[in-house]
Amino acid sequence: MDTPDAVMARISQGQERAVAGDREGARRIFDEVWDALQGFGDTTPDPLHVVTLAHYMADVQTDPAEELRWDLRALGAADSLTDDRAREHHSSLSVAGFYPSLHLNVAAAHHALGQSSEARHHLDRAAQSCDHLADDGYGRMIRGAVTRLRAELDVTVGPPGQSGRRAQHR
Image (cartoon, rainbow, N blue to C red):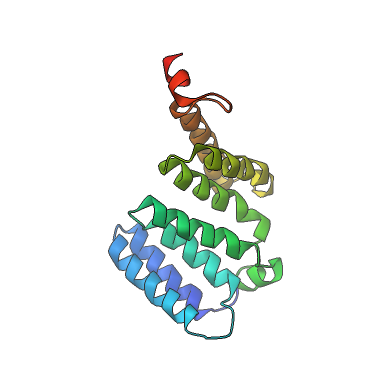
């Protein structure tokens, strides 16, 4: 982290709990941070805080509809985030690099809810924005996840323009 930020530090603590398998503990921390962000009244929360918190909060949901709600909140916040603000947190960040993962997560949540056309739309957006990712471990992970979700959609609902039932019988 280039600039200390207490909110981002608290979000990181929640993410550490999530990675360690304590989803409930992570949700409690994320809820606490979300409540604090909303408690500023007339001021709009920092988009970096919202996109980061919502992105991680989506991952610890058990209900796919709630996961989608948080994923969409993260995606919306990214639209308000500037590269300058992202780079205040870490000099390597750019907003364009957030979109592949954000759209991928929205696509996966739509897929989990059986909303294949919405899933494909966001998956296409994720694939289009992958050009903004480096050819490193993270970039390969996101590109691989896009490829896997596309293959899963093709198997479960068929290629675009086909019904899932026909695709399963071919």
